[in-house]
Image 1: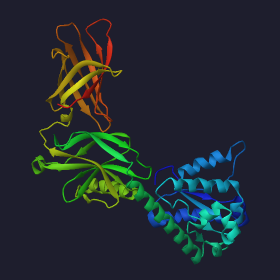
Image 2 (image 1 turned 45 degrees about the vertical axis):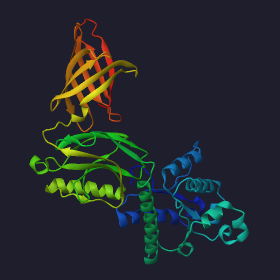
Image 3 (image 1 turned 180 degrees about the horizontal axis):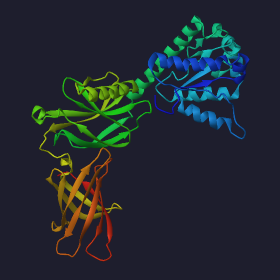
Image 4 (image 1 turned 90 degrees about the horizontal axis):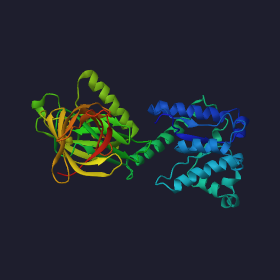
Length: 417
């Protein structure tokens, strides 16, 4: 469960709770604890216990909390249908069901007998009463004065917690399969030779707060080696391709996947990583059933290659405002961590040459080096970073051959070669 998010919204009237000596408040707390006992999930169920503070607009407060909550648990009583606030909460979640593929956001608990559900006329004249009736509500009227410490009370709480968990798990699986969620591996390209430790980056779109996304390496037979959880729209990661001794995996092709998983699978991946690191046993895990591949690139294990090999090639040269200078820049690896480059104008004549020494961290690729214009007294220093979302190279620099020390900014956009 994501931190700071509510699994459900406890929709009730304070009168009903106070009239029964806070029985509803106690039920909510025990339901949260039972969900954790059954699943180890640390869920939160929002309950407005304190009421609305002086000068605070109640609707803004409750709507904000409901926007974070996944489910609505309405406590159905005569007072509930008479409360404008409760009706607004029920209406909001009913509308949410109407615009999504999931039709089980509302989990009603029938607490006190009311005509809205029992009388044909009252039900027909109240749309929200029909909404409750259509949701296969849980009837807990006989449990109203039950001690929650009793065996019967504990069994009732266990049954409610089990139902809530089933809904949570079903919703997580639905979010994991969402077609709106997309992933892209910007670099390295397919069939790129890479060493054991290599850097990758790409993008994610429309990832639900109920879904985690991982970068995994497949080693054959649907055995996955989870590498890192991707937590940003534009991500970058340093991962391991195959086993450490180069002779064992030299020349092998390894698929690398962006994998969307449920949060239970994500926890299992994290636990596997900790145990594998402690015991030095990286046996891998089967592909989890509750997962979906968003993108794949296959790389070739080659420990003589550079992790920066995907930077080689020709780039358009553009100014920081996006306007083209009419030239191209060709990058070529001179060593595992050094790039030589040559810039040509539209006529094919070399304008300047230089080199950049590269460094990689889990967060970014950076480079620092020197450049020299040919036939001009113009040279200086420049720095380079790689844009994780596009693969473009962003270059800033300073002319050191003139007293002014003119600064510049350039964007290099890679083109097909």
